[in-house]
Length: 372
Image (cartoon, rainbow, N blue to C red; front, side, top):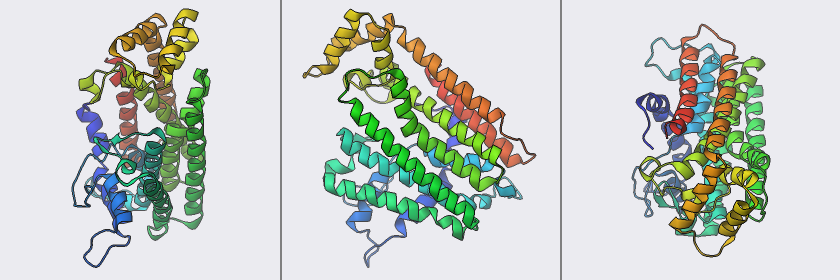
């Protein structure tokens, strides 16, 4: 989906610094005498979009880098440890937080590799997934390697001058988030075997996945920016709310976005029979006859046809599911804005700009679905 110039500016402002930190973290590892990465690190670089299947350098879509961007924005919003640059082009003050930003993105990518295996997905970001090329065992190992590398990268904050007690708290925060992520993936996979899943159970699941790592990113950034616990807690809460909102946005786009907007099949989540918020809400609100039809379609062995997709969309219309999902997302955006408004303000220009950028993230989440 095309991004507005405002949100592009927000997402791109720190992209170069994040990308440099990521490359430093991965490329600092072992290579042969010619400088070519061993297959192990080559597979990491393939997943990150830096090389092709022969490990020849290339550049593909790195994604939005949302989590490390959020970490750096939270760091700035919290005051950036009172490190005010002499001019707007000076980004040296980011050095304190960049190891953590790289660590959170490496953590995210380790979960993507494992998710692709567990979901049997053969494509990500318009390229073949790691396991579909090198096999499941090697992909599991590469994902494990990224997880270990993320923790090793995080300790770079000590070389960046971060105090030892804060570094220890950062490690504990990331470890806790990873545990919650695993809980969320367990719930997600268990849902595949269940016929009846409540909306509240689904929200609990996505809170443990998307929201957990977004919340962790915001909290870690805030911890690097200040010792004020109220500020840290407010920004952690923002990460949680925006994380839930982002997932609900994706659920809405997965059903109602056009092919041109989404860049992939319209109503793709219905074709995949994904148990996302729209189908779960419809099942709770539909008549018995419509419930039976939805269950039959989602359990049939044959692929869902275009005509059957239209049937599902008609049931969504009867249950006012699209309006429900929009209203749910709006409530999460209200929560996110409320937490931002409650962040203690400072005269730091870096903080003011970051808070404005975080407000832009909320606008982006809300406007993309309400404009459909």
